[in-house]
Image (cartoon, rainbow, N blue to C red; front, side):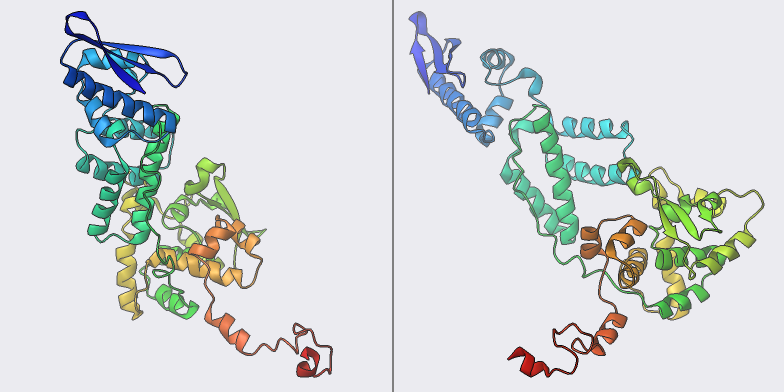
Length: 397
């Protein structure tokens, strides 16, 4: 693919045919044949990666990273590398995140990306983007596993990492995503999901410290609101008492063109909402008082709400065994109940997700469903295919 040509006075040059079939020449000047052959081998490795569309070999990427300006410019002149495309890995990641910060992305997304960038910065200081390999990706995955993170967390962080490389490919900084196949199984997503019975929820509500806490629990369990972002964003103008509807603000989906969704004002929510309305100061805009909102709003959104700790104390007072993912399980239990009574397409419209997400992350069979199935006679109900009065066994034969 490439060859070294000896010129007079000890000068060397490398000739090769580019991917466009045009002959290119790299004039090396005076140097030993051994050094020229070494450079020629690296040129062949770069050409092979370009032709096959594969990532640059790690040794070649490190070699490019160590080049002096003069040889780097000669390689760039013949199209083997791009001077403007040699980026510090950590610098690229920080620029990537800074660009998202000015593009209106949700604060929770910025936090999630920032966590991965922090881990990558610690693990790969001083590396260039071009030198990152699939082996580096596996090392990163192993480091996450050694921290005993959950499988779903590792899966999500690797997804973010691949996104960084995909964007670099789209921008033309690198030719291919070396971490494309660095993945981790999500595991059983239902292992940390629990169905919270209505009786337990009522008992918890009875032990809540005030009307606002009773409303928060009711909105999560009986309305399926994402806590704290949605109830803390809810205003009294969003409540349509006459039509029995609530326009729930949805910060999580606002960038997808879904700033709010409409849910029914369920009878199980109304008494707690009415009690909060009676307790609200005249002229109040938000359903949850401002003192709670200010205390919960930090530089990264509603992250400092500390609702989980307080709810845990309420559970202990009520004598109820804590369930996994306290607030998320309330929302998923609501969706499980609704899915047993209404079409799933309608339920997911109310709760702001999709049927596939609901089935994977939210909906589980309830005890009521099992009790109903235990007393359901398919044949008598006309689902077994037998006509009235026909012997089922005879019909099958």
